[in-house]
Amino acid sequence: MLKVSKFGGSSVANAQQIKKVQQIIASDPTRKIVVTSASGKEHAEDHKVTDLLYLCYEHKRYGMPVDSMFNLIKDKLLSIENELGLATQLAQDIDALYQELQQPIELDYLVSRGEYLTAKLLSHVLDYTFIDAKDLLFFKYNGELDYEKMKLAFNQLEDIQTGIVVPGFYGAFPNGEIHLMSRGGSDVTGSILANLANAERYENWTDVSGILKADPRLVKNPRQIDIITYEELRELSYMGASVIHEEAVYPVKDKNIPIYILNTNDSKNDGTIILNKVDAEKRHAITGIAGKQEFSAITLVKEHMSSDFGTIRKALEVLESYQLKVEHISTAIDTFSLVVQSSQLKPIYYDLVHDLKKVCQATQINVTHELSLIAIVSRFMKEKTGMSGRVFTALGEQNINISLISQTGNETNIILAVKNQDYKKTIQTIYSEFEGDDSIEKS
Ligand SMILES: Nc1ncnc2c1ncn2[C@@H]1O[C@H](COP(=O)(O)OP(=O)(O)O)[C@@H](O)[C@H]1O
Ligand SMILES: N[C@@H](CC(=O)OP(=O)(O)O)C(=O)O
Image 1 (tube, rainbow, N blue to C red):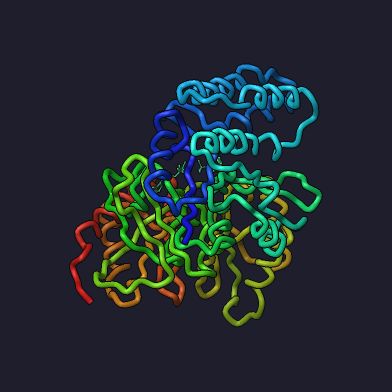
Image 2 (cartoon, protein in one colour):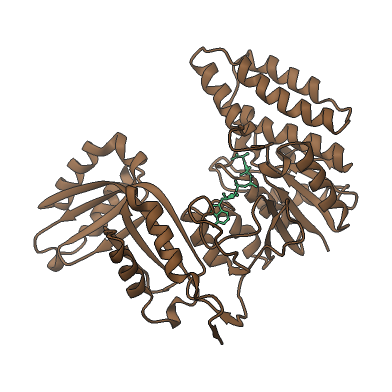
């Protein structure tokens, strides 16, 4: 049986980190498929190679010099090669990229070079074969993954038993052009490869010991989640728990392949296991809390809406015509609110409000900006009473006003909107409210 091991940017940020990766791979002979992100931040003030490549592209676009930024990338990668005492083609590859940068260059191709160069370097360290993602991960022109084509390519790989390293974050369109995934996409590459390999497990190695009950940048020493379901993970990651990309769930879920979130800096820690179904022996109140900032709520008021048909549908059609994604809906009798990302709303704001008013014959439309969405996720929520009561009381005691509330019949989460200024305090307050609840009840 094989394991697919994906290493995030922090795991390949410098030579010391790469040595840890080498030890992790050497400690388990079934770790034959390795995916890597581009070299990431060594410390808080450092820059991710991916961010520098985006900056190079933007500078070039505005006719500004790129050399200082490009040299940061060059120095970072070459110093890793140097410290590890490797003799590779890296310097020539980087110089060739610099030459390409003097000509018109596609953004996706340029940014993908971070993963490409890092994976080449790692393949030398591990003595595994480098497989370019453009020859293994295929997209159709509509952006969907082409699993049939990927299966064929994967089955033709000859070096799996000796080990392969694949760059994450990109693949190719049918014409061979590079197509970049969304940020954090190397997690998805790992998940796709785990699916293709029918892997025993998908390991996602990062700089934290698994998924924590809250973002460690907001809550001091949050507890670690031992086991979580795919559904809970998807909700937490979509709502901002950035430790793993929200789309990484689907390829492994189909085949019931467990995901392990593990710490490159503490490889003995069991981390978090993500499964389809958990045979729980402990019931906790909440699995985790996550949140995202910068949302707007469009609130539409229409007299006698309760006796009308189709007002919400018409409003949703207007938003669809502007390709504006609805994050949440809450409804009352003659009014409803649609929550959207502020950055998507901004450029179309006046036209959209005008169209909504006309198409829905709204009495009034109010838009509230600077909102944050916070999700409280738990697979046990259904079985527990008083959860929302505790959340509201705890927030009330801190004078935090809740702008919107939503919960679906699944009862796996409660979603709240609060003002951006209350974002951090809300997450901290909810975390403290439930912190002591772990392992209090046995099933
Ligand atoms: N609930 C959470 N649990 C763990 N980490 C979280 C959570 N929410 C946010 N994070 C952040 O996610 C980071 C790991 O993700 P990322 O930076 O993408 O790592 P990598 O570069 O290894 O892919 C952690 O360092 C942490 O700051
Ligand atoms: N390097 C890409 C892809 C990725 O997955 O990175 P990381 O694993 O470091 O989050 C990014 O920064 O978006």
